[in-house]
Length: 102
Image 1 (cartoon, rainbow, N blue to C red):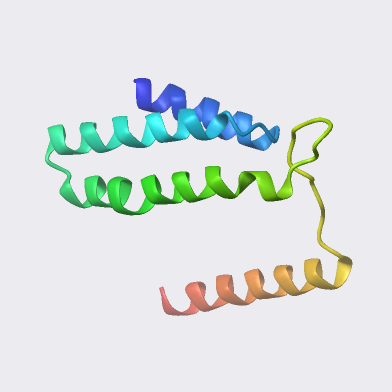
Image 2: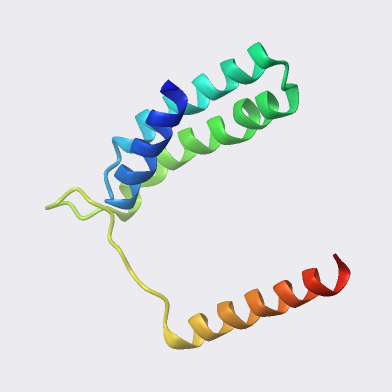
């Protein structure tokens, strides 16, 4: 339960640009890893401990590079139209590949 609640708070806070969300993310990741070991889901445990947890640390340490010093929030940008079109085209192409082969 703690893992789920902290995971939701982590997602919400990072969406708002608050670095404190990483602390909740680290807690949610470690709680999820503990739960996975308790349930015998060792692949899930390895994913949480060896992928998600280091990414939380790296993200927290790199957060300061893109923050506004006045508001202490992340500087938010959007994709230019050319990159939006490229992303959408690639997503549709990958979806069609999955439809054809699966």
